[in-house]
Image (cartoon, rainbow, N blue to C red; front, side):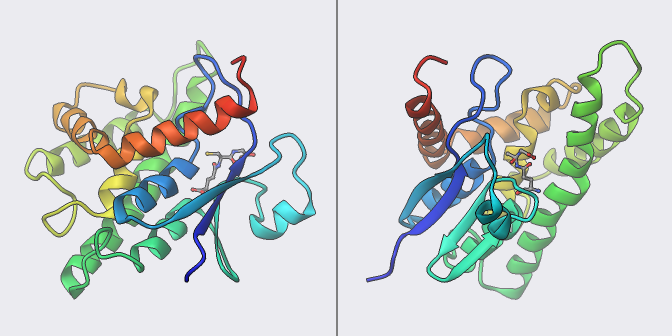
Amino acid sequence: MTEPLTIWTYDWVPGGKSGPRGFVRDLRLRWACEEAGLDYDVRSVSFHHRGAEHFARQPFGQVPFLEDGDINVFESGACLLYLARKSETLMPRDRKGEAETLEWTIAALNSIEMVTVPWWFIGLSKGAENPLEGWVLQRLTHLEAVLAEREWLAAGRFTVADLLMADVLRVPKVKAAGDFPALKSYVERICARPAFKRAHDGQMAHFAQADPQS
Ligand SMILES: N[C@@H](CCC(=O)N[C@@H](CS)C(=O)NCC(=O)O)C(=O)O
């Protein structure tokens, strides 16, 4: 019998309105496993005390990382592509479908999240004009044009690229960045998938267990 996969996340993250519960990136891995019907356990590293063992598995002291027997993978995008090799549900096996899935998975990270995350961080300091505003709006405008014409990013069906792109776009600040109806309905559609709800509920329960007060 094969061992279940282990998804590693923090033991705790801040709760409340502005806390990251429901958005910690282990959700991406949970969601992929739920979509693909892959067995997984979730284990925790300390949020407050990130020791040498944690850095040995995630060189930036972050989460998530994935354990599959003697294999350890860090970076949520790499973990998703690793999981996609285990299940055709996440990535088609034909060369064209696979190439499209790869390009859009990397685009979610390297063309959208690479801009939205620093934009969001800069936006936390009130008052000053955000120098990345135009860049974010330009990227979302281009993506809007793509998603106005198609239901899925790659291969004409749901893939891990949709999972990742929707996870990048569902961040409240990004959703509120401008009027992008195709992006809005895309995120609603992808996040309405039962596997997303199971992953989200799983993460919320994980952190609530650690800290039932928040
Ligand atoms: N590029 C990394 C980013 C990981 C990341 O930002 N993780 C957050 C949680 S979602 C974290 O650990 N933040 C704490 C920190 O950066 O110290 C990935 O996609 O896995």
